[in-house]
Amino acid sequence: MNGKTVAIIGAGPVGLAAAAHVLERGMSPIVLEAGPEAGHAVRQWQHVQLFSPWEYNVDNAAARLLAPTGWNSPDPQSYPTGGELIDQYLDPLATRTPLREAIRASSRVTAISRAGFEKAKTKGRDQAPFEIRYQNGKGPEVLRADAVIDVSGTWFSPNPAGSNGLPAIGERERADRIAYGMPDVRGADRTRYAGKTVAVLGAGHSAVGTLIDLVQLAGEVPGTQAIWLLRGADPAKAFGGGSNDKLAARGELGSTFAALVAAGKIRVETGFGVTHLSDSEGRLRISAGSCCGARSVVADELIVSTGFRPSLSFLSELRLRLDPAIEAPAALAPLIDPNEHSCGTVRPHGARELAHDEPGFYLAGMKSYGRAPTFLMMTGYEQVRSIVADIAGDKEAAARVELVLPETGVCTRGGVESGAAAGCCGGPAKEELSACCAADETAKKAGSAGCGCS
Image (tube, rainbow, N blue to C red; front, side, top):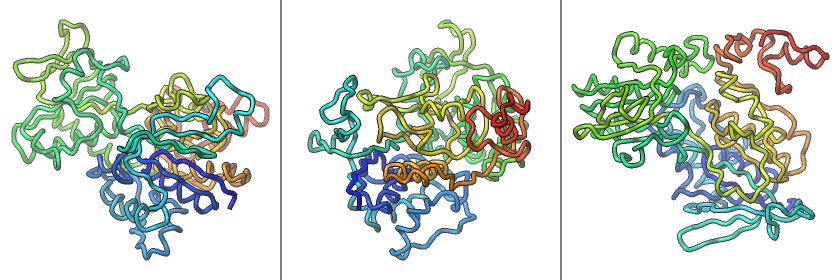
């Protein structure tokens, strides 16, 4: 036991995995979860099926912690829903292992600093413990820790409807007819959407999945109509890699969606950058362009599936090194920048890419990706394995890569289709941040400008 206390913000899959690794390293985890129980964010999308099978959704250290409890590992080749992930993995991990003593539920972190140090003070800063303030319903609480891993995610910080990153004019006033993320349109939220005209804004997997569910709902309840509001001009970009995608469920989703669009089951409005939301005879007018409604659609409900962004408000007294555009750690941002990449995965990464100018503090999980949309759960497990090794002083293990990611079949870099992620050019780069593939990485290490495939 080296006596270190590690505060972990968030008791989702990656947060619990971090705690399992901390325990395994002989340190003490304290997990602060804002919700009433572990997996609170997952419970908001428990109707959704994951793209990856069970073999990629169980952390190794967590599995070792569960083994003595008599836990039955799920079929590694089956695809769980969010609800099954909770019932068969997260709940047992949080309640039947020593982690139950480490989790503090209903504990919302409000601020983090160094004990006795404001942000501008440097001398001796590295030796000061972290001071974490949180609210738990009994008033403000304070705890101190030697290291902090923030895996609080982004689910409760959705992007707004406005195409400029701001809420559309009138968006807040019409919140009762707007949902964000991926509501359960065929289940818990069925009565809200059945028989209605529903507009879905976005081009990612959440938007695609919701539109597919709405088409299925239309087959069950006459009068249900789905409208796809797409900011871009090319709907095909949302169809993904199809049969080339090594995550088969993700490829099938894109193929199913493409077929529904081709069959005219979904009304498509391309180049639709939302600017205004207003009332229209008891319904919702969604406008793109000027306040006069140069172009608009009228719907009963709007679902905004435009991604998420990290909440950084409680980190204002820490010295973060974040990319100014993506809001991801500066060393990670070039790998995931959606301006350059449409890859389904990036190369595995860990403590080196996730560290900041505040030694002992790390962002991990979905929050570490900032505004980029390509995160996979297994990537988060590799992140925290490396981070915890780094905190424990095992630099060799922290630098080691212990994950092979499934590759997507279609990867775009700089607007040019590339086969790097599918195995061409030696596959993805392993270390060089600026390399687009293994061949490019080798060329750059040899002193060349690159292999030219980017």
